[in-house]
Amino acid sequence: MAIAFDDGAADALISAANSADEVLRAEGGFLCGAVERAVQDFNGGYGRLFKDACGIRSDDRGKLAGVLAVLAEDVGEAKHRAQQEKARQKNMDAWQQRDNIRKQHLLSGNIAKTSVTVATMVLDPMPERTPVPAPAVSAVFSPRDRPRFAGGPGSGTTSADPGKLRGFASVSRTATNTLNSHFVAVRNAWSGFTASCSWVTIETESFVAGFEQLLAANAADADWIEQVATAFETAGNGSIADSMLNGLFIQYAAPNQVGLNDIGTMSAAQLKVWLGNGGSARLRELLTQPGLDPVATATWWSGLGHTVEPATGKVTVGEEQQLLIDALPEVIGNLNGVTATARDLANRKKLLQMHNHWKKYREEHGGKVDEGSQEGMVNKIWETLYDTEGNEKVVDTDDKSSIFQLVSFVPFGLGTGSETGFGASISVGDLDAAKHVTYQLPGLDTTVGKDMASKTKQANDQRVEQRDLARLNGIDRDRLACHLWHGRHHRTGWCQRPANENPRRANRWQGRHLRLLRQVNRV
Image 1 (cartoon, one colour):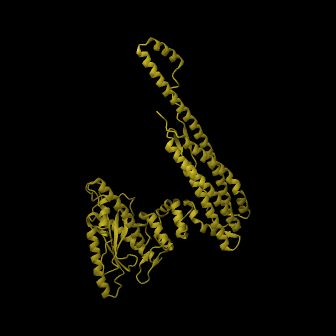
Image 2: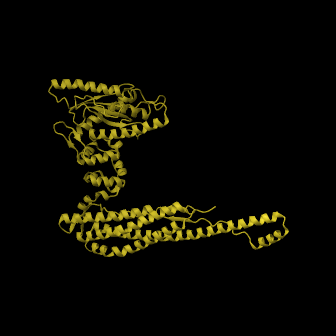
């Protein structure tokens, strides 16, 4: 059986790997002058980071060059073995044909032919039967991280010549662009080799992704150094406090270097970069730590930047707040100290995700919905807030203040529950804008599954009555809210709790919420 090995594909990979190897080894000399000029005046915390980054870059390109050199040798050896195996198979096929003819002669009964055949059998032995072992190729490389954030107390200073920094950035980009063309050639050659040389075993391979990551790190270094140069040009002198540079480059900080106050100093662009570099896990850790003070949280959240319309009290979330909502909706949606508007946006986002998940699941698997399950709870809340077309329900088209807000949403199985356990709370009326809030407490055996829709209607009816009374007493009718909370339905015979559990939990929740409102209103 013929082996799958294309000599042309192997030659293309050998050529591409060797060319990239040569360019990588030459890059050090190309960058040397620009690096030496930049470091002459680049001192302090960020100067050390630059020198470290250059050292890491040098080490990484040396390692990658070595990987490519070994790869070219291994592919060359694989080509040699493939040629040996192809030759062995060709010899075996030819011998088999001759041997078949000899066997026919032996069976013919012709004494003369038989004598000649026996003689040729001695002179034409069977070639090597054992196949040449298929070679294995392994090419592993991943670049190291390059710190770009000094951190620390920020008591030091950094000095630099911005012109020399920009000179390095320009030379670095030229080198990266040159190397990128070789990366494309290597990537394409590797793809062609693996597609047409399946006889070779690929043991481990990460060099293509690592090569691309190296290029990205080089490009990021150039951008970073240009940003440092801009900071010095803006400052108008050759020395800047590290604390100021830390603020400019907070997005490059490792997740464990960042606290809530640091997040509060980030711009939307910085925050987006930081969240994308593993910051979401750190944010979750910070926002779910035990003993988090709701008042401190409210101050921090407000500092992220939202607007409040003076006439109506309506809150509009800021860009930074929206990024956090998108990153961790299940956390922001149930975080005491966060505005009801933001919690509603977060909880609706999570509700939509879960509703779509369960809808797809039910379409694929069929069957009936267990009303006491997470799916049942999600469906009930969805039906309360959205119509059959997926549009948000409006309480009263003539009353723009009569909105629904999903202020908490902790369905069974989503996490560990909230302070009051699994459940959901809905406000009829804007809880942020409201100057007067009424709380509805669940009665005995009140659950999301069977009471959410009716209790929400009851809350709305109560608010309508309050609006009429407010008009008679000179109170702003639009700044009223009626807030209700429901626990989840408990399955019969499973995790049973006292029948009056929901009222107890609601009382605890109401007490905490009222204290929080009084504290937060002073922020």
